[in-house]
Image (cartoon, rainbow, N blue to C red; front, top):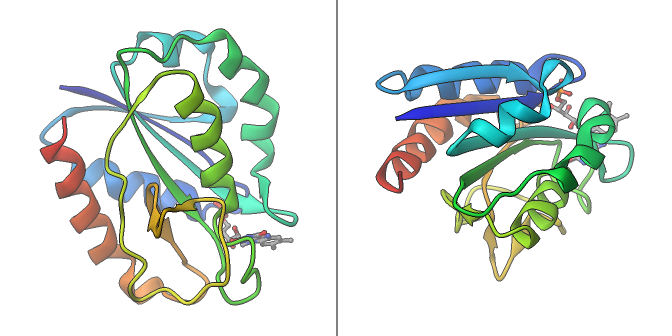
Amino acid sequence: MQITILYGSSAGATQNVAEQIAENLSAHEIKLLDINKAQIEDLQEAKVLILGTSTWGDGDLQDDWDDFSSNLDLIDFRGKKVAFFGLGDQDSYYDTFVDAMGILYETINKKGATIIAGGIEAEGYDFGSSRAFIDGKFIGLAIDEDNQSNLTSSRIAQWSKLLESQL
Ligand SMILES: Cc1cc2nc3c(=O)[nH]c(=O)nc-3n(C[C@H](O)[C@H](O)[C@H](O)COP(=O)(O)O)c2cc1C
């Protein structure tokens, strides 16, 4: 199964997590790409997409995703399986924790994608609100390298297994 992982990362943390996800899914053919180098075709051709973004500003999309986001309108997501991961800082940004993952989700869910690897419990996190937290669950994998880096590898491993079970 070919899986395309696209990430936007301003200081490298999301890129690191994207690489760890790729390692966890190494049984599959992985295409790992920075969104600042991606073409619309990279998304159009993919059947399974994993999209990762950090959150900047006050609940904003990472810059490279922001630049790319108007292209999302040009892509037909019907028939594609899409999963999300997001990086944020739940301590300093308590009320906008991983919001950017929620922004991507809102856009792509509307366009008919089949969302996979969602429904993640918030146990172990301590945040006030998040656009990525819907009906009491995260819509994808939330990672906090600023405060909980000790939990990152186990969160990734568990999530990657969930994702694989839904391919
Ligand atoms: C100026 C600034 C604004 C930020 N805003 C948010 C935010 O609104 N919500 C959040 O969850 N994290 C926020 N963060 C935390 C980053 O998302 C986090 O450090 C992330 O790991 C950065 O990933 P990157 O290096 O891949 O860009 C912010 C960080 C900085 C420095």
